[in-house]
Length: 28
Image 1 (cartoon, one colour):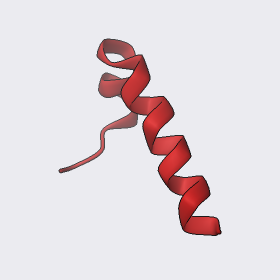
Image 2: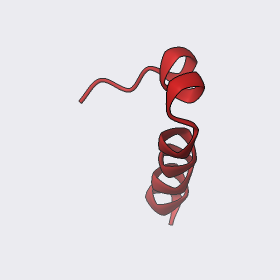
Image 3: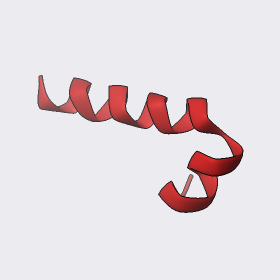
Image 4: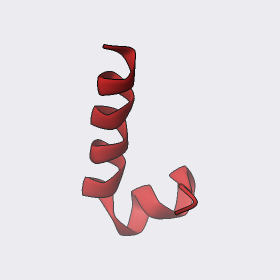
């Protein structure tokens, strides 16, 4: 899976939110 912030956030806003959550989990 290759995360593409620009295109994915426009077509799939929820996907962008999930990426943010995953990043938060990685910090923990």
